[in-house]
Length: 420
Ligand SMILES: Cc1cc2nc3c(=O)[nH]c(=O)nc-3n(C[C@H](O)[C@H](O)[C@H](O)COP(=O)(O)OP(=O)(O)OC[C@H]3O[C@@H](n4cnc5c(N)ncnc54)[C@H](O)[C@@H]3O)c2cc1C
Image (cartoon, rainbow, N blue to C red; front, side, top):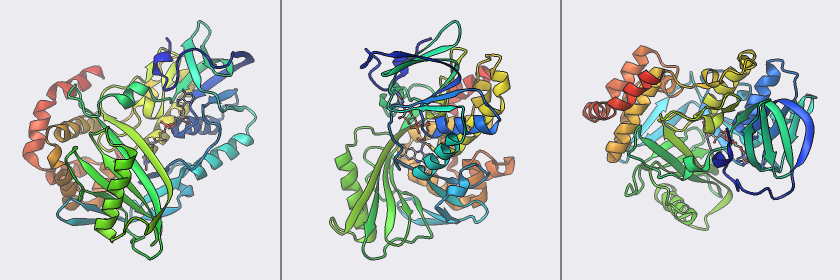
């Protein structure tokens, strides 16, 4: 099975003549991002001493993103958190809703710190090879294993894990009516600095809907790093056609509306952007029997929220722990399937409701954070909710739109049951 058409880059003729590597790797990891590096980390933790290859087109590791998530279970990287908040705010357009949950703080990890920790670990492991600056052109199964062709080399291995996102998943229409509903969370953020204190460092804003809603659900996320520094992210759930210039303009408008800031009164330190598929459609987890997709490419983003970091930790830990099963070349999707049936059902209905009634988005999120117990909401977001938590969430949400969405999506969630 060829991965050629899944690749985000060229996919055509190699730029440089490939050379043949002599080593046969037990595990080849395509993509040295969050999932690829977490998987390699977990393989080492599981005591694997066989050769592991990690290939990436990047040639360095910058602080290219920050990961925030609710600290509901330990991860090897949670101790890297630079910030921890036990309070957060949602603004549904009419009112400010503050949630408090000291039990499960919302924490922030800089990707630079994550990369450093993982790379330090690899430096002391003799079995990890990092091949950087090498776009993967093709990966194909052979009778013996998997062959990966990059712009600089050919690699042979027994199993491969792919975290390179298929371009088609990112460029398809943001909002599709095909079933199940697929949305694309599309965002652009700026880390800004101001001279005089304006941010409340104790309370991030998870969603502020005081924004134009003409192109579907649209909100701003504000992560205060101090009184004078914050990451401000402009997020759309449907529209892909928003240019960087428009994002910058809308962030500027928001900063003016909320903090009275004008252009020139704040300095942009960093910018980041991303597009995260939100769908319960079955992802291509196992591509053939020897190549398994992981990370966003392996459906690791929570369909209803786009949060992925914690799920990637679970997914890669599960794969590493089940690695002895993988030796039998069984498809690895049993280890990497995410989200129980309950969450897949709830997320299918949730996405259907957003697609059917986009104007209700602010009300839906507002009511959930306002009416349901905060710890229950966090456990629900982290897929660790009890039945009582789920009932609290359902009770908090507008009933009729969700009942209509449940009916509208019944063929989708029925197929969820069937495909188990
Ligand atoms: C800016 C941003 C902020 C985010 N914030 C959060 C957050 O706060 N909380 C949360 O839970 N989730 C967040 N996410 C979502 C998710 O956690 C991240 O996208 C995460 O990095 C996904 O991990 P991944 O390994 O699947 O993809 P990536 O980390 O993007 O890794 C994929 C790797 O594949 C490499 N690659 C791609 N194509 C090729 C090729 N052809 N050849 C070789 N290498 C290739 C890339 O260079 C990259 O290193 C965020 C995403 C972004 C983009």
